[in-house]
Length: 72
Image 1: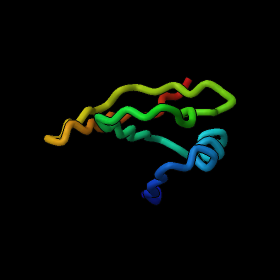
Image 2 (image 1 turned 180 degrees about the horizontal axis):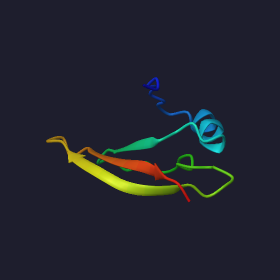
Image 3 (image 1 turned 90 degrees about the vertical axis):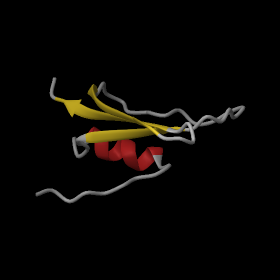
Image 4 (image 1 turned 120 degrees about the horizontal axis):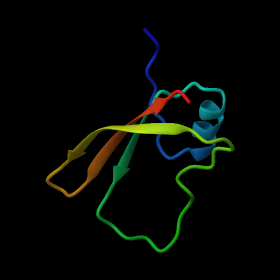
């Protein structure tokens, strides 16, 4: 069984792991708050195929969308 790690708010680390194929799932948290500016969600150099797997909605309005990496 592969180890499980959680990366929160570190796009550079996520991109480095994705580039060498070490990520198999993305959980994208969306909160009902608007912010004037921010960082891009993904910066990966190559295209990564994702398949929607699950969506969970919380009473607070937050939504977690789970995507699994697909092989091209």
